[in-house]
Length: 402
Image (tube, rainbow, N blue to C red; front, top):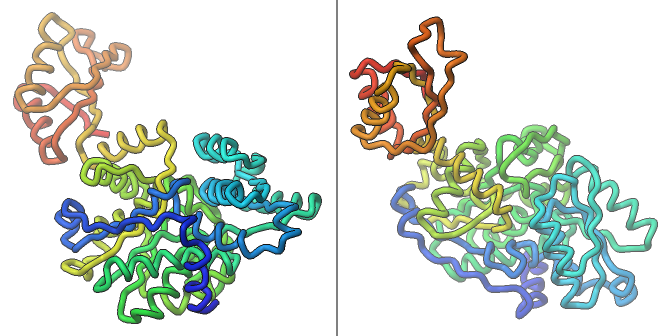
């Protein structure tokens, strides 16, 4: 891979891929202590950066291969990008998705005209099936993160970032298979070697971290993650070879940190991103990047394709991680006025009751008492502690929140 290939890719995709904005975020800057800029590739037509590489790879195919069509395995974003750009170019596309792929991504691919095959429990199994179908049907397989043309196309993000934030001091990039990281790192480090490249992974699917530790791509066991777009069992060989010498630091983030980051983006940026795209902010909020406080940092919001049903659950999980939504058990009198006293004390502490469930069977040996499971909304963890203190001062025993 060379920087010249990234520059050539920019010319090939011009006019077919959205030149996404990279505005400064005042609220995210305030909560992180950094000067935050957000590269909004979640605003691409198909909702992710993947269109860049897909377009660059497709336009370089020989005419006969374009006529026959292409195939790829993807958790969703590469599939959508290939389907959309293939449709624009008149190239048939088949995509193999794991069975767990978000329904919104499956539906979008089908609406874009792609043939969708659901196969396997994870990306690795879907990819193996993709290669089988490519051989059987004479299709060209386009790897979503390790094809050199894909890596070069993704690198155009880095060129745009330096045009939009020429004095950037760090670029924070999500990493799954490594194609985006490799392309961005190559572009940025060629033009501005002093800019820090920070790779961020979900700790449940940290394939790049494993490769760094082993010195080569190595297969890992995947665990469930909100960042499904990063769930790749082994980082790409080409991507790793390019990115390895250029990345300054790797950071992993937890599922709760990802959920909280998604919540922050919804509340403060009024934006919707998928789990993978929230990992850069999660890293900034984790306390692991304190050396970047006060510096100009670009967060790459790589995609916005999150299932609406998942989004609602993620927001609730973020509220729980934030200490703003909690559940605890309280033992109260089962006589008239017992429940009223409980709700009065919660209200007097300034909390909002979302749900109350009576549990008489497991309340203990005192038949005059009842256990009540309360779900309450509070401002933060300190406020929740005040609620517990208020109840205790009025003789109401509570369990720890969960």
